[in-house]
Length: 101
Image (spheres, rainbow, N blue to C red):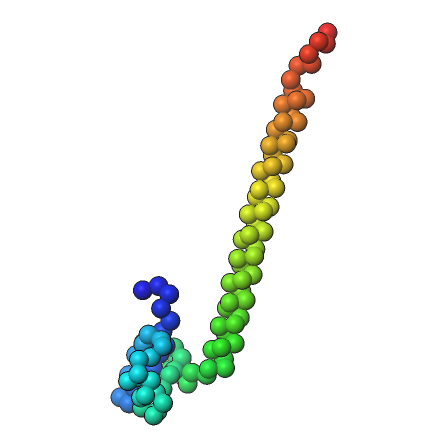
C-alpha cells in the first residue's frame, strides 16, 4: 500500500522484519525494552538523527522539484503565447496587402 511508512526491525532471533509505522503498542513495548531493535537495510543500527536529516533533505528536494515543475509549466505557457503571437505575425506579413497594386 502506497504512503505507508515502514521500518526494519531485528528481533531476538536475528531475523529482520519490515513493520508498518507507527508500531502498535505490543511492538512499541518490545522496542522500548530492547527486545527488538530498528535497523537499516544493511542491518546496521538505525540512527534517528541520520534518518531525520535524510527525511528533511528528501522533503527539501521534493519541494525543489515541485517548484521546478511549476516554473516549467509557467515557461510552457509563455512559450505557447509567444508561438501564437509569432503565428499571427507571420500570417500578417504573408497576407497580400489590401488595396495595393
